[in-house]
Image (tube, rainbow, N blue to C red; front, side, top):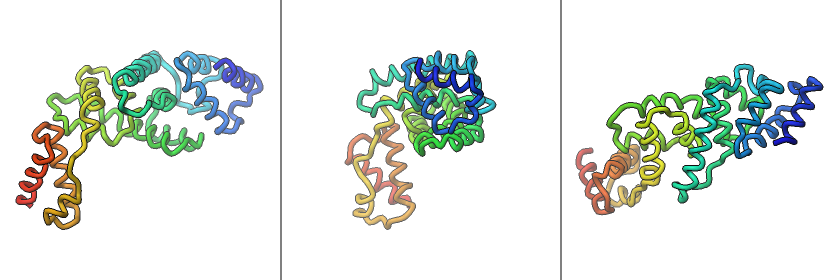
Length: 239
């Protein structure tokens, strides 16, 4: 961190920051986001040089500080509770927190200017485009496990963790926690080959039937492979 800030300070002193190749700035920013507590370093960077070189509308606030602190807590929670999951990309989680206040078009500009990798770009744009909508959706009481699953499953682990960090409502945090600890790993014992063996012609109906069975499993209406098969036969009779 000191070496990174020193290089950036020298660039500021020479009024060179806006002229530095974006990829070099990206690499320095990534190093800051790899720090165990990156908010302090990024805050110093804002005081030293501002954050306009990332995006003119980007700035840190008390809300940003709160989000960084919550992300740190969620990363720690994930390490202790989700040991069967892959390791969290901490760098990406903090990058999501840093850019989380920007609108989707602004985030797209940052991604393009700094030539961010496809995985990072996908996660950052997903959070910017749907983060608030996801939280609003999960605010509604009485969500079934299948509803929570289909809202969160398309998102990366890092996006889901930052959403949990950003949510103020206990109910939303609880839904996300249940997804991460219980629903997220749900898989069916059967697949398309079973539907084919039962005489269902290939087509969109495969997805319809399998989703119905998955929803039933998530909602604890079926548990065993035999129960899944029984439900498939029932659904096929209704087609």
